[in-house]
Structures are given as C-alpha cells and as structure tokens.
Length: 206
Image 1 (cartoon, rainbow, N blue to C red):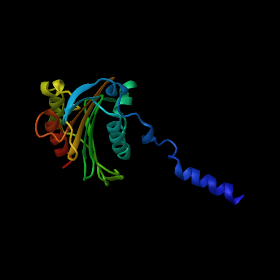
Image 2: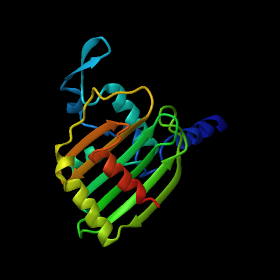
Image 3: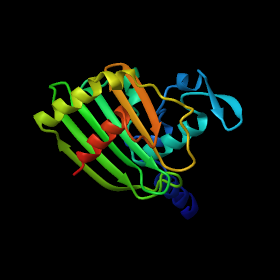
Image 4: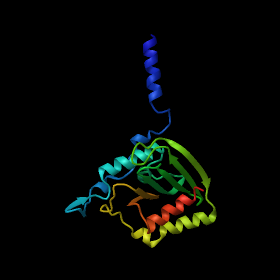
C-alpha cells in the first residue's frame, strides 16, 4: 500500500496547487501575428518574416510564464470585470535578468503597478521570480501613463521584423484595453516611443 500512496504524493507535488493558474498553458500572443509577412534584406538575400516568429512566441512566452504573468491577449477575449485596461513592458536582455512592469487600470480609474525581476538570463533559462513589488500609482503618474499610451507616435508604431540582432535586448510593449489587444516589439531601441515607454515604466520600479 505504501507505493501507491507515494505515487499520489509525487503527482500532487508535481501538479499546480488547486486554484493556481498553470502559466505554461497560457496563450500569450494571438496567432495572426504569425500570419502576415514582411520582406527583409538579411545579408545578401531577401526573406519574408512575420511580425512574431514561432521562435519568438515560444521564447517570450517562456519568460512571461516564469514571471507568473497573466496573458493580456487571453484577457482581451474575455475582458475582466474589475480591470478596464492593462499595460505591460517586458525587457528581455540576452545576458541579464528579464524585467516585467505591468500596470492595471481598475474600473474606478486607479492604476496599480506590478513589477518583477527574474533570476535567470533572458537569452537562456529565465529562472524564477527574484523580486516583485506592487503599489498604487499617484494621480500624476497615472496621467503620464495615459498620455504616453495615447500618444500619436506610439499609436503609429509598428513592429519591424527586419530589425534583428544577435545580442542585445528585446523590448515588448503590450496593451489590453477592453477587448482590444496590441503587441509591439523592438530590438535594443535607442529612441522612439518604445524606448520612451520602457524607460518610463522602469523608472516607476524605484
């Protein structure tokens, strides 16, 4: 009788706790991001790349899953009743820890920040959550966030899959407003709306 009992204990230990979400099963990005193609000049040849490759989908999803982050895309399919909008910035460096900063706007207009830093390296194993912080934003911080995400340059920004590099940082900005989801990404941005939003959200961690 001892062996079946031990097997049951091992199965319980390996399975998620009752009620806890299984982040590895979440779909973080919509399938249509894989569908369209953009012609890119990579070295001597032309090739067509999607806005989000299968490799990137798996890579980014693994980082967000390790950070125990919700899927904003899935939330857009069934909008939350208590959260009107969510904004998330994810920085994935090749050789340093991934950082995630998410801002949830409640129905009453208040904004709550959740920031996390993983223990691994973005280009390799993500590790686990090593740091987390949550706080309510001030009225000014909330107004600045709304202004940044409503800015014309961000609305017009489109992911360029031809913007590639071997090392550096992948910066992702996601928005979920009601049932509308959007992802934009940029490799090691030096200026522009993604750089501006990323640096602003990182500063809120301090």
